[in-house]
Length: 330
Image (cartoon, rainbow, N blue to C red; front, top):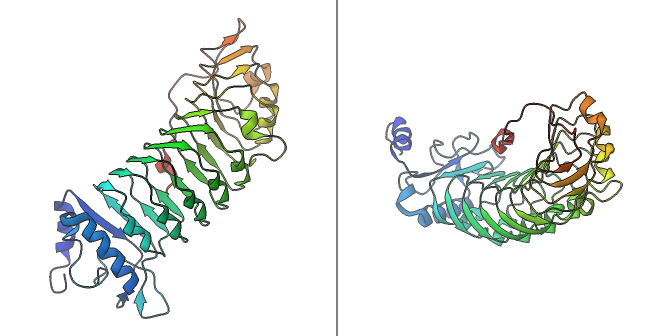
């Protein structure tokens, strides 16, 4: 690319339907560190012709068009920003885990297969890991729990199986955890209650079992700052524990299509910002607490498909509520 028009690489991006791109912050007049050059060339080789036009020469960051790195105090470039790839088919590109300074890895909406390699735990600076909308499978490697700076974990719409690893509770900065539309089994680890910064949790549409009492426990068993809790379309049983009232910032509680039983605890009225409550298609019985109908924030309450006494009515207009995980990527 050295003496060619600066528009040529951009034209190639438009013309190639399948390509591999690395997007990072600007840096001028320095060379990429050898470790990252080696890793990038390994990625290039593993993807074959799909990246043949992404860079030319020994330094893939040479002209700053495809790779833009962060300024450092040494005369070299380190790949410290983002890796974004499109139209990749096949196993997870393990060579990516050699880019040790990555802060964001985005391989969503591809056709990746097989497991996430345990080498993922090498990316100690990673803050965002987005692998949703692939065909990844097998169990999650416990090494994900070594990503201590991770704030966003998007693994939805894959074929992961096994139990949700308890090692996820070792991610002290985690704010967004999306595991929906997989094949996870077993109970939701109560240790996730140690995630004091967690805001959004979505484990819907899996094969999870257990009770909310197991999950929430008592006292400070789950962060009170959680805003959205999606547990729908699983095999959860048991009732609604009073401890749900401790989730004082909860806005969305989605429990549709489970096997939950018992009465609806009036403690739900004490959740001050509760806005969407989905209890439909379970085995709940009894009466709906009158306070829920008078709750100043509650807009939607779905109750159909249960065994409530006559007179129980839903609240709000029925519509499909979808929380797009892309809304929280930036």
